[in-house]
Length: 128
Image 1 (spheres, helix red, strand yellow):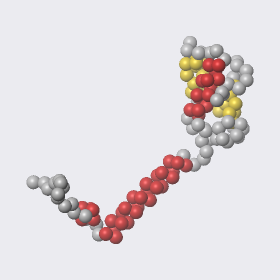
Image 2 (cartoon, one colour):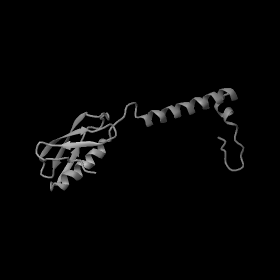
Image 3 (cartoon, helix red, strand yellow):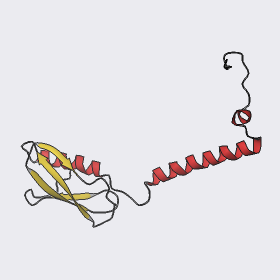
Image 4 (cartoon, helix red, strand yellow):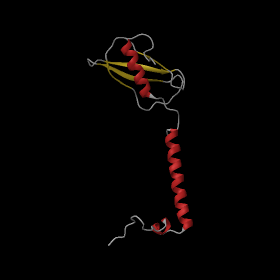
């Protein structure tokens, strides 16, 4: 028969449950806390480098092309793009009829400001 820890029952200390002495338990808990903190810092840093929010670029492109009177079906940009002034990358915009057009996106700075252009449509297509 198993013993439960219901209401009123006393639970043994954590160190006895794990079979560790107190200094060893403290070391295990500290190591766990350090690993958790390290994982949070790595996630916040994005594994190094400054990345451009390409989903935001897609959204701005969708709005800009729609303002030109084109019924946009989808806009796709690369997921991982480093934010660097002067760098370019290519997105693909597709209308509801299935016609695709390549869109050149040029980074104006490393803060997410971009200029989007195609061979067909003139002017900046990335609208905020």
